Image 1 (cartoon, rainbow, N blue to C red):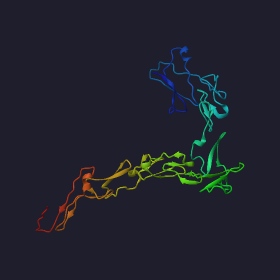
Image 2: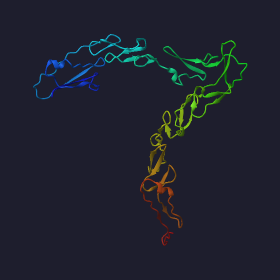
Image 3: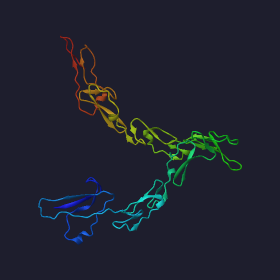
Length: 326
């Protein structure tokens, strides 16, 4: 059956608009059909059968350019609810508000709190302050930025013996305050100590998301996790596939060992006819023995191997000997 399909973009790879249209019986049935793209490009595909008895496909189109902050299916007669000063633009079909970088919410009325990110300011003694249109990293009260942009003491305190920095406020009389760098916390009003385990940042206010059992150590300044060798990703939550990323994790003897990844580790499994020597090495199972006396001994690890295998020992001594085994 003849039909037409519309796509919301320059090719058939884009989403469909509406359904598959197979023709209309009269003009009235076409008046309720509205095909509209979300952007400035649309693709129409007409497909006909072999009957040759139909009249084909015909449609008219026009470009619609809504005035700023208006929307609607045809006439753009509805006003967007966005706060204009906080909005890049309003979607011309459904009226959605596209907020600028510093605002959020359905109508772009909520100021984005940039300071929720504990690492947005990099200096050890600065702090984040939200301001209209963004944020600033400011030194803590009583500290100043030096020529390299780092916060430092303006002058020495006389009343408090701070273990690290001391800030002198501009009040009258001035108030002395001891400050700790990020990764430490103030105790006894003067002494800075390291954050407790799994805490980090300014005044040790944040708890890291590292997986403790998979993390070798973490940074108490910014909370970054350093994983054990068998784990990876931001919080050490993903298994590290040693068989893929480590060159020859198993000591191969003529390709007679294979690596199998396990959760948090890996195994080296020997091919049939070979036995484990240690955790990563396989050696030929069985020997040719020519001494007049000796022992035959398979490692106990052979029984732990994951494949069925045979071991063969050949004992060959001088002509005239017989061999006794016990």
